Every structure is written in C-alpha cells, then in structure tokens.
Amino acid sequence: MRERDMTRRRVLGIGGALGLMTATGLSASAALARRPSFTGAELRSAVPLPPPFQVPLPIPSVLAPVSASGGADRYAITQREASAEILPGVRTPLWTYDGTFPGPTIESRRGRPVTVTHRNELPVPTVVHLHGGRTPAASDGYPTDLLLPDGRQETAMHMGHGMHDPRAVVTTLTRDYTFPLDQRPTLLWYHDHRMDFTAPAIWRGLAGLHIVRDDAEDGLGLPAGPRELPLMIADRAFAADGSLAYPALRDRPGVTDPYLGGVLGDVILVNGAPWPEHEADAARYRLRVLNASNARHYELEAVTDDGRRLDLVQVGADQGLLAAPVTHRVLPIAPAERYDVIVDFSGVAIGSRVRVVNRLGSGRTRDVMAFRIARAAADGSRVPRTLSADLPAWRRSDAVRVREFAFRTGRMNGGHGWLIGGLPFDPGRSDVTVGLGEVEVWRLVADVHHPVHLHLVGFRVLSRSGRPPLPHDAGLKDTVSLRPGESVEIITRFDGYRGRYLFHCHNAEHEDMGMMANLEII
Image (cartoon, rainbow, N blue to C red; front, side, top):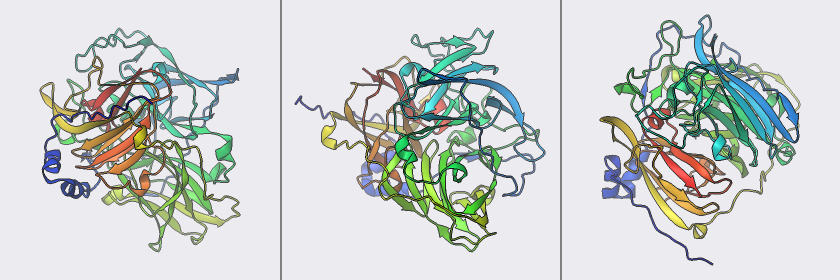
C-alpha cells in the first residue's frame, strides 16, 4: 500500500470571527454558531403584497424529450425573456428557461444519458450548471464557458473583473450539455452560472428542477404521483412597476453596500407563487424541497391550526436517499441544499390547514406555504426502515490528505470581496489539484454563514467544530451550511471525470464577489 500523504493545507489570513475562534478555541466557535442562520439585508417590495395562502401551488411542467433513441434522451430549452403574473394582477418581466419560472422539470432515469440543447435568446451571455450532477467538465457549466446570444461579439477573454481565461470554451446561440446521470436517484437543479453574474441571473428566473429516478427507489413504496411534490423555495422583492427589484451595481459586478452579505427578498415564492396553498389528502406526502434563494436560510416546520408540529421524516439529502429515515421537527435548509421529506397528514382534521413556516423569518417572511386538508383518502405508501444500501463508506484512514480552507470576507479589486484561503476567484489560477479516485478530508472554516458547494462529487459530513454531525447532515451531500465561526469536516472521493471543476459558496452574492476556487481533477 502506497504511503499516505497526510499533509494539511495552511489557512491564509483567518481574521475577524475566525481570529476569535483561534484565540479561544471551540467554545467561541460554538457561541458564534448559535447566531441566527441568515446573512444579508432584506429588500422591501414597492407594490402591495397579497395575503398568504390565496394562490394555488403551481407544479412545474415536465419537459418532453424531442427524441428518445439509442439509449439516450435529448431535450431542447430556449432561454428567453417572458413576463408572468407572480403577484396577482401584476406582470413581472423575467429571464426564463422556456418561458416559465421555474423552468420546466426534466425527469430522467439513472444511467440513461441526457443531452439538453440550450438556445440563448436573452440579451446576455449565459452558462448552465446542473447542480449536483456527476457531469463531464465540458458540460458542467464552468463560469467562463459562455453561451453567447446571436450577434454578440463578447467573448470569455474579458470577464467582469478584467480576467482572462484561455481555457474558456465559448459558443454562440446554441450549446449541447450532456449529462450521463450515472448517479444515485435524487433531486438536482439547473441554473445559470455565469462568472460574476450568477446571483442576478438566478434572481431574474434562470432556475429549474431535474429529477433522477431508478427502479430500486420506485420499489420502496414512498408517496408518489400527485402525492410527490417538488417545492422550489425562493425569496424575491418587487419594484413599483412589478419588476423584480435587485440592488446591482451599475459599473461592475456585485451589489450595493447594504446587501454585500447577500440579498434577501420580502416575498416567499414556492414554485414561483407567493405563499401558495395546496389542497391535500389526509395521507402521506413526499416533499422534494430545494432552497433556491440567493442568500436566505430557512428553518422549516409544519404546524397545524391548533399549534401541533408534524414530523418531517427525512428520507433523502442532496445526493439521494439516506440509509434510514431521520425524523425532524425543524429542518434547517441553506441556499442550494435539498431535502427529501415525508409529511403525514392522516391525523389532521379534514378542512383544517397545515402551515409550513420559517422560524428564521419575521413578519411576512415567516410564512412559506400551506396545505389545506381537503378529504380522507386511502394511502398505500410507506416509509421503509431501510432506504438505501449503496451509500459510500469512506473512512478517515482512506484519505490521502487533509486540506483546510477559510471562507471569509476580504478586499478585492479595491472593494469588498468574499475570499477562499485569502484569495478571490481567478479562472486562470490552479487552486486545488486532486488525483482521480483519491479520497480527501476537507476542513472548511467560516466567518459568517457560507453554504459551500462542491461540483461533481457528493460528500459526507464528518464533524462540526470537533463534534458529531447534526441530524440533518445525514446522507450524501453536495452543499453544506457553515455557521458563523464554525469548522466542518467533510470526506469525499474525487471520482467520475477528469477536468476543471469548482467549489464555492452558494450564497450567490458571495459567489459573484470572489468566493469560488478551481478544483482540477487529473
């Protein structure tokens, strides 16, 4: 057996809250971690907002393939401007996938490749990333691999911060993204990933769902059909003319000073509808929950009219099914995280309501959505004690090295930035090089809240500030929420494909202002 290289990468310039943690140990880290789970400032809408629970919950349409031959499926999506009535009686211009927000859902089978041809009819370059996908580098959506609108002369040679990327692959009008989908069944999502402009693009509507299924999961007996609901939760704010308000800078990427920590909206949307209500049977439901907000964190709970909290039985995480169910009363969810949960409405009185609320919200942002229990119904679903036996069993002793990264605020280009290891993102710089198939442990350290996402691979959470993982850390994840002053250890195997990938904070404003790094798999 070859010699293990257990070197540790030195953290560069940990300051502020992290300096306090270094000086006083884990007790300071724990104290900082008890702060409320939010980062950013809230935009206030300039139009009257509707009361909650008046709009039906929309279910995004499922996209039909344009061809399904040779063991693969091909889809076509047009990125275009559209308008929609998000708030009742108000038209809102959007950037969309196929004219809807969220974009159409793609449903696929494990191991059956999918190719999506994207056509860009928007006024800006775009990049598509399938978040959570085990994807070859050429289709992963590297931020400088631009898809230009027809007639645009812009290239990847001049990025928002004046950066040059000789490896960028730029196409005009259309681009094929191929996803082998050789991965566990789960809920993925696709969104724009253009360098320096991810946050405003997602805010304007460029996000959609992609569900991977397989026969083993289908055979478990979990709620299905109309009792399986995808729920894309996102906050937004509206200007006086009905457009989406966003505090973008005029002369460079980023946002105005009050919102440097992240942009929060005062309207909670679920599947593009404000505080919707869904008519439900008195039965079990499977809720496929995605936090697609730019920066807002949630602590979700389901509360009946008489104040009783229902169990949230988690059966899956970012990267698919857990080994066994985990029961929560409150479920924290950071930007880009996904949770697969079962809620049982069979004990709820017919005609009453179950509200999904955000314990971190206040005023209008405390409500998320509601279920109106409309009727008694037969229910043949179940929640098995064993869900999956194919989770990886990586051990610390398998790791060939341990790395440490500080996620913290700093200065870049003469202004505010968000840095990894003391450095802002540069597509021309190699940050981390890993051999294909190697197992590593990463220790991630935060100053404020940072949801950290690794492209290509899933990982397991080993510890939080030297303590065991939290109950919601179960399973295989691709995004982990770091709390203020916290250190989190994760373990993964870098397998799948060689090439250039990323890891970054998924607070989209942090990401646009430098908090990304390159991951080269060789």
